[in-house]
Length: 197
Image 1 (tube, one colour):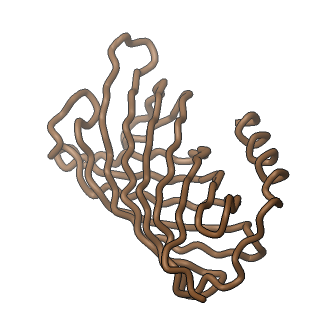
Image 2: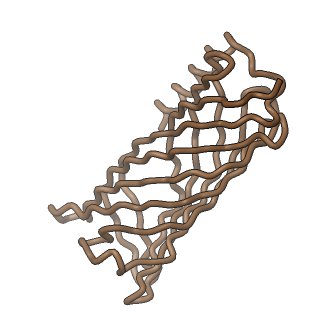
């Protein structure tokens, strides 16, 4: 994580070469972000706490609209692929999660932004390769901070840090699975379309 933060600060230090357009109201943002994470994770099932080694890959196609020069709102499709291995075992339990999320992003100063989003979705190949109907009501919530590096008037490179909360329920047992205190680093490429004049 220290490496990610160092990279974020380094990119920010280089990002003063091109200014953010002043008139963004009425413009669209189109693009997506990708992230990679690994480590150890505590998972609370509601009846017991388990510990897993994990690898996470994610991609978020995104579209947003500037309702003002400092605020945009949009939707994203968040796709996560997990490779989990319980401590003491040799078998990986792989599953995917897909969420449709709505979000809002605020720019308090030029280029720096805060965002928050919440989504609902589905879990495929739940833990231990259970049927996908074994889990429902998946909820994803995230808050984050990022920086917009304007390569030109229409192309933006964005490093971001997110805090995420994940929760879903096993419909057969009633157990609720939660992954909390999850911080990850993501990189985005975004394009400004139909910029207002």
